[in-house]
Image (cartoon, rainbow, N blue to C red; front, side):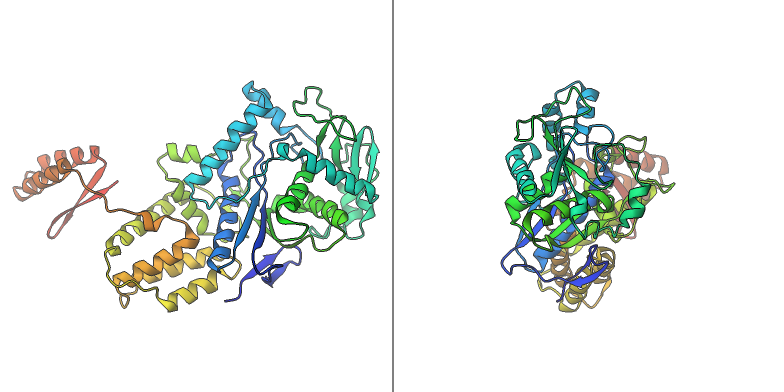
Amino acid sequence: MALKLYNTLSRKKELFKPIKKTEIGFYTCGPTVYNFAHIGNLRGFLFYDFVKRVLLFNDYKVKHVMNITDVGHLTSDADEGEDKMLKGAKREKKTVWDVAAFYTQAFKDDMVKLNFILPKYFPKATDHIKEQIAFVKVLEKKGFTYTAGGNVYFDASKLNDYGKLARLDLEVEGQARVDKDLNKKNPHDFVLWFTKSKFQDQGMKWESPFGTGYPGWHLECSAMSMKYLGKQFDIHCGGIDHIPVHHTNEIAQSEAAIGKKPWVKYWLHNEFLILGKGEKMAKSGDNFLTLSVLEEKGYSPLDYRYFCLGTHYRKPLMFSFSALDGARTSLKRLYDKVLEIKTGNKVKVNKKYLNRFIKEINDDFNTAQALATMWEVLKDEKLSVGDKYSTLLEFDQVFGLGLKDLKVDKIPKEVVQLAEERLSARLDKDWKKADDLREKIAKFGYVVGDTKDGYELKKE
């Protein structure tokens, strides 16, 4: 069944036609490891995981590369603001290297908790300085660079289609931008290599033909993606905030270097997670929520995964704890239903529902509609429990909710004994004793419910 992707470059859905039949080249912008990833960041990373799962579900082989930005770059895409890695080091009184190592591992831990299929490669910017220097030398040889104030710049005016991803009106955008770098010839030029950093205590520097310094942020993605995926590849993902500057500059330097267009065939961008007042989550604000914070509040990482599945990636996702409560309730209900049907004998994936599911996920990753189809499968009384179970396991290759790993909870003997005593108390109409026993059962982490045949025990 045809796979359609919304390509930011064309602003329309396109039929996916890979460059090679054997393997999909897939690059996703990774974290800048100066702090924990917040749940807004993780929404984007979850989307990348869904994209990969859909590609795999369609029987494509996927070569996935996600960069780790562990070298200092400025808080603004436009070469302005604070150095993020330096900011993290000062905050924690550690070296930038220690900060990078700690938060890289923390990010990978979050990915495991959220049940990601991990990328094949996690290249770190600091491990690929040689490749980045070589990339600048190629651009220099082709006449796309100039040096001013000790730094090497990319000359955006040398490209007649600069800004095509963001559809920039260069004259208007150039006038509107507050340009703090007087060394630039044009407002949209950007630094490829810094030797004159405004931070005197810059902790990461390397020798280069351009002087001792460090690379500009945009450089690493072009150099590392080409090393692992070749000069042209299929899909590049990122957040919508990357469109106007970071991904625009990646395209400019990459297509200038390779002399081919397009460098990347399909550009996919996810919308933000937003809060009640419409603002996006930020690491510098009071709304900084991490996965660990959610866990401390009693939520499972997969509750958050389910929550993200319910809204299309190109729509803003409104976060609230009440909404997350709803996702948690739905996921628990799903788990309970799956455990009820897990013992079914007939194991056959239902073709009608499978075809509908494929149509939905292949329509620009419509996970919200695919979830609705999953619930229809559970409600369909014409399907055997075995067919339902097999069909849901097939769907979960995309959802990643861990359905095949669910196990029936073995209730401790002490809890069963308390429930039996409570049933006797109820039959004797000793309501106080029944209530006391309910509380004792709750301390074991179980909820007891009354049924016409006696009682039911469930894990809280």
